[in-house]
Length: 167
Image 1 (cartoon, rainbow, N blue to C red):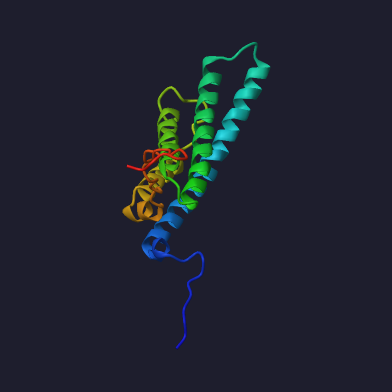
Image 2 (tube, rainbow, N blue to C red; image 1 turned 180 degrees about the vertical axis):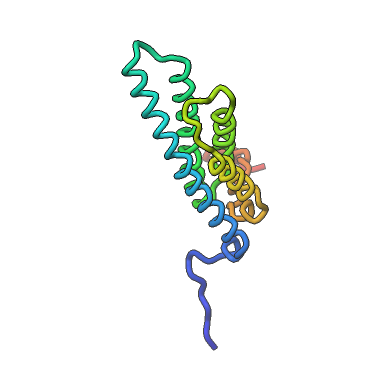
C-alpha cells in the first residue's frame, strides 16, 4: 500500500481547475490589455511633452493629448499590479479598476473633443471589456483565497498574586 503525501502547493483551494483557468485567462487578458493600452499612452505622453517644449505653454489640445495618455498610463499601472495581486490570490479589485479606467479614458479619447490623432481605439475598448468580464467570472472569484479569520481577542484572565486564593 502506497501512502500519498500531497505536495506543499496542493490543497483544497488548488483543486479547482475552472478557477485556475479563469484566473489564468484573466491575468493573460489583463497583461495583453496593459501592453495594448501602454503603447498609445507612451506615445501620447511623449507627444504632449514634446509639444509643451516647443510651445510657450500647454495648449488645450496638448492637455487633452497628455490627459488621455496619463489616463491610460494609470490604467496600465492598475492592470499590472492588479494582475500580480490576482496571481498571488489576494484580490481582483485593482484589475477591475484598471480596466474601467482604460474604458473611460478610451471613451474620452474617442469623444469629439479628441481630433488630434484620429487613430481607432477599438482594440483598447474591447480589451478593457474583456478584462472586466473575465475578472468578474465566478471561477475567477473562487481562485482568491478567503481572508484569514482572526480569532476574537478575549479578555485577559485575571491576574493572581502570590498568596491570593482563587475564587
